[in-house]
Image (cartoon, rainbow, N blue to C red; front, top):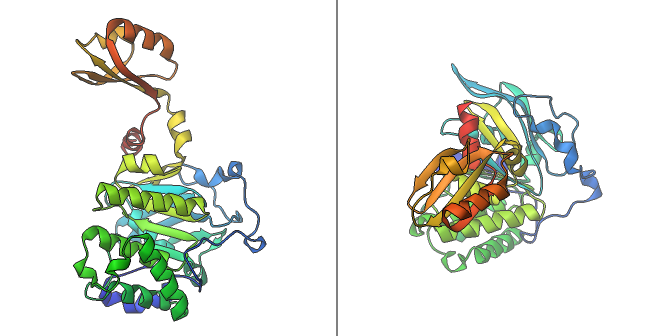
Length: 358
């Protein structure tokens, strides 16, 4: 559901809805009516880093697809022929600098932004109003009612799409308990901390048992414990088959959580796909060394290496992917009192910087 500022909510909430009747926040299982599941190897097409072939006719349980999505606001092109897919059962991180087009793309899923060109698809067909009743949306600009009691508000929002009061109440109570907010159910929203308000906002998106979750900066303002709990929840939902797309500027967190990433810059998709595969394709590797005592001459230890960081007790080197790691480790041990040594592909932060700078 799209939760807008209170003055707009009455117009759009009933149309977008939270979901169909259900007794609890248990994931719906795949059935024959959903069509066949598509093997992972068949997802190559929609993951073109630049605008590529449309995904018309690709049908898969829970796949969200952007097919040449373009949106202009006057002279500004917010989305420029965006083509990518979000796969079920996986967490997809939607990344980009401020103003890159992430929120516009997310709003287009819910019909809050009308595209000039292109289509947003769900299971291979253009998204319909009926599909959106199975979607959950957490906007960046929070839209709950600050002076309304937590449980009353969630039940009210859950019933806007036609669910019965008992079903909605049961679902709301289950999620409040799961988020540790059962004891605050009768409190006004504005009496809660920022982190707990975030939890209530997420419950509003989850109460309809959505097949698709679209979350705009869900980790913003959360403390480390709350971030960990949010990450575990999203990982659990995706493991149960949900399609989850979320935006974030916390790239280390995205690297830890997500299997797929989509990077957008100036309205264009500049990189998208399986995160592990994207990292593995980069021809360079990062070596991080921690040691005791005086620093060796890193340029002599690894000819051709670029020293990215060299401080007392630690160093980071960029080396070629064909570097003899065993030889480098052996010579490092000979020249320094080694504490730790790691060799890995570039981090998501490195990929992001390269992608947006290209």
